[in-house]
Structures are given as C-alpha cells and as structure tokens.
Length: 523
Image (tube, rainbow, N blue to C red; front, top):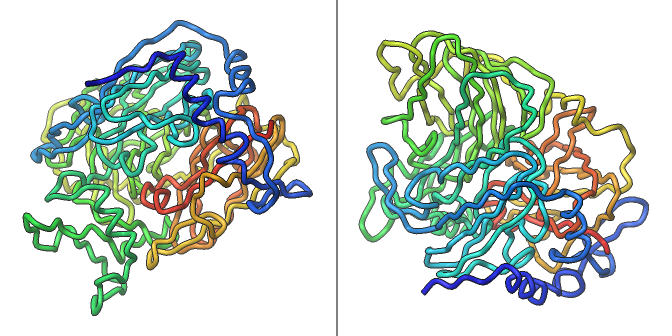
C-alpha cells in the first residue's frame, strides 16, 4: 500500500532525521586558514537543509504561480527502436515526460515511488532550496518503495535543465527527463524548439543492469582478465562475449581513447546509444520547414559517455550552456560531458539531415533526423563531416555580459584533487572516498574558488549542486565542467545559497565508487 506523508509532517521528520547534518553526522569538516580549505580541520556547526537560513533564502526568491505535477517512478517495458527492454522509468516513456515551467513559477511535483527500492529526485543545475535538492541522507530521507515525496520550490532562472535520481546508479536506467524553464522575456527569436536528450544504454539488455555493471567495475580492470591484451585495441566485451541466460556479458570497456578527452574515453561498453530514447536503427524524426530557425536544447543524460554532436550540413550557433547565456559562437560540433547542456540555434535547410551524437572514443553513435523536405533518410551509419569540423568546448566560450561573474579575488580556495584509477576502481577526491561525515566549509557571501586538479588518467565531468560557477577570464557560467587528465581547472562561484551541497563527478560509476564530497555553509 502506497503511503503519502503530508508536506508539513515530512519537513518536521526531515528536520529531526537530518539534524545531525548541522552538528554531528556531517559536521566533521575543514576550515583552512589563509583562505583555503582542507578536509582535516576541526568540526563546526553548519546550516541544516531545513534550517532558517535555507527558508530565508527561499523567501527572497518569492513565490509565483504553482505548477502542480505528479510523476511515478515504476518498472516499465521500453521500446528503444526495435529492441524492447525492461527498465525503471518515469511512467511508460523514455525520456520521462518533459516538465516545462516559467521562471518565477513555483514547482510542486509529487514523486510516487513504485520501484522495488528507495529513490530520490535531483534537479540538475537548479539553484533551489537545499531541502529539495534530492540527495538521500544529506538533504532528505530516501523515498521508500510504496511512498511518495512532495518537492516544492521556487524556480527563478530560465534555462535547460533535467532531473534524475541521486540514489546509487539509478540514473543509468530510464529515470531521467528534461526540465525546461522558459524565460518570460525570451530574447532569442526562433520558430521551433527541439529538446535532444542523449544517453548510453545498458539496462535490460541481455540481463545487464547498472548495478551489475558497477559490481563488475568495482573489481578493477585486471580482475579475471589474465592473459588478455590490455593494449591499444579497444576491447568491446559487450559485443563480443557470448550471452547465456545465467550470466550477462561483461560491460567493461578497455582501449577506448579520445584525444579530445585526453586519453581514456570511458569505462563501460554500452550496447546502445540513444537520442530521445531511440536507437539509430529507428530514430526520432523532427519535422520543420526550410528556413525555420530551430532552437535545439542538448542534454547529456549518459552515465559514462561524452558525446560529440553535429547536425549534417548545418552550422550551429551556441547561445547557452548549462542554462546560462554565452556570447554567441558558431561551430560545426559540440562536445558534451555527462550532465552538460548546450542550447544552439540552426537555420534549417531543405532535405533530410542526420543529427549524429558520436559516443566519443567508443566508435558508436546515436542519431536522430531533421526532416524539412522529401528524400531518403540517411542510414544509421551516417557520420556528417561536421563531426570533424570546428568544435567548441566550454573553455572557449565567454559568459553573456549580464551573467558574467565580476572580477573579485576569491575569499576561499578549495583544492579538489581527483584521484583513482580504472585498475583499482578507487575513484576519490583528495585521496578519500565519499564520507557523509566530511565536508568542506564555505561562508555565505564568499567568492569561492574550486580548483580541480586531475591526478588521474581519465576525464571527469565535475558537477556542483545548488550553484553555477564561472570559468576563468569571464568564461562560461556552468554547473558541470570537464576536467581533463593531468590538467587543472579553476571555477569560481558566489556562496549565495545556504545548505549542504554535493560536489561530484557525473560519471555515475565514478561518483558511486567514491568521487563525491560535500560543501557545507557555516552557520
């Protein structure tokens, strides 16, 4: 029997259950002198997710028209385009039904959990109230099987966002959907809009599940691989291993490399790559007229794959990344790490054109079609020349003037050393796996510099909850940014949203293996 906890009761339970978050359970922390932070300093008191500071910040956001929505997380049979799989999804569709609101609205969404285990819902990219951020054990209790949870918060900033669980590796099932926040004073002019969600898919294929993939990876690259060539050839085990009813194929990927990603491309050999839930054999077709100006909102919802995206015979004008405007820049192709979003404008030509999302370094691709006229559709193997043309990455973009962080020396620098290896699968931050009793302190009003230092041979898309940061030199405003192996990336943000906030790699297998930490606002 499904139970529903009223909002006022839920919040009082949350306060009692997570009171330790401010003074005990999560209070082992750091406060480095001289404007730096390390995880080894003395404990202190922190703002709790349902504390007065969080409520005051939400009150400042105001409350607009309420948009009420109900979603059910449930088991589902999903047609990927010629292959039906059993998975978990929001309703009976992949991606889940798009949620669309207007900046200034209050979103009231009830999540009903019909799954066989607890779940949650994280609103990726939103600067929202902390107790609605959807991180079990940090900002809320898990939503039990058979129960429901009311998420209610002000949505203040327009842009392209999405939502997914923050519970184990559930995100690598079908539990994700776009969240589009429209601008009531939209400055862009366009005729049509196309939301494009990219994904890598393994769940339900030949008995595979994301949990089984994580269990395999956790054993390390060399486990039971004696005598196998670990050299330059890509070992795509999922395609080459005999499948039996008793044992799913291995999904460990070795030898996949990409110069764009600085070396290793990923850990998982996925059997399918999808655009809006469809495989290339039966792609989604977006219809328009020649000359239409189309806004495409790209979202990478993948678990372990960067996508290089191009629209055949078209150039794209980049207008936004991670919900924030940038100085417009033309490009042939884009690179999206997991969790990243880009908005572009294209002027549609006459014909049928492949929108190809190359699984970077993995020698496979997802595809959709843009049709504005007659003619035969390109096949699933189409690789438009634009994929090898001009490519824009986030570090080459400038934030729009209205959202650019003004120059200010950081009050605090937090150095985050990204550590671990595929061989041992011991991903961590500063050499320490995620521990909810440890956090890095910040203070309201500070300009905080996050200094990511990648000491691994893998790339990591690092994601900060509840805030956006600015890349160096007036660069793009982001909440998720790729840190290449052997490189350092500095990102600044203003500490203006009190609470406890996750900071983690958005490779779901890296984060669940330990590459996560917490930022905490001091009381």
